[in-house]
Image 1 (cartoon, rainbow, N blue to C red):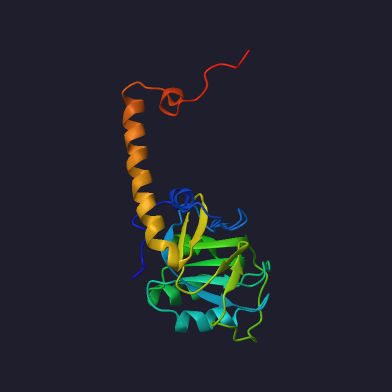
Image 2 (cartoon, rainbow, N blue to C red):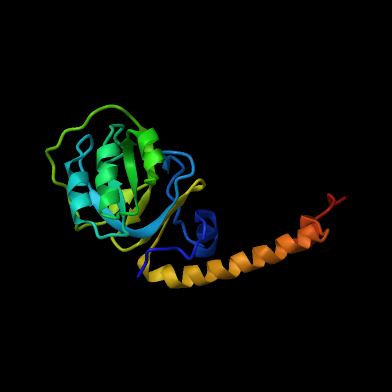
Length: 202
């Protein structure tokens, strides 16, 4: 049902949504050029423990994006091995409020990861985690089934019940932006196109 965002960027979807759907700027691509879009699979784990992520890779449906709350812990909760396992199971990517490692290897694999930090600090494997509750990632509450879109500008999370209307608005917004770009190429200024003030009032 929801394995794409009709090709829209995170910025376009944020502007089309008119709600606070952007993860805080601390959630960044773990490697340059990473992009992801898909339905969230919410994972609650314990700080510094990555057993929940191993469980999530085995549980999550193909096409989903793992959205993981480990309370911002700066440990390497995820790396090359888990990325390879997730890629084999056709999981679309990872957004984690915490740390990851092996970013060069994940870039070579083309597995998209968005994280709060990069860290070589190890983890334990004691807590199986929770997959039945909403999680907090990047300051947002995320539920399984919400749409996740991440790119170089950031990560947005769109609630499932608002998805179609936001995507329709995004389609309209992109069409309008293309019209404006055509006008700029024909010689018009942004001051004209947006009816902006050209001089300070006296």
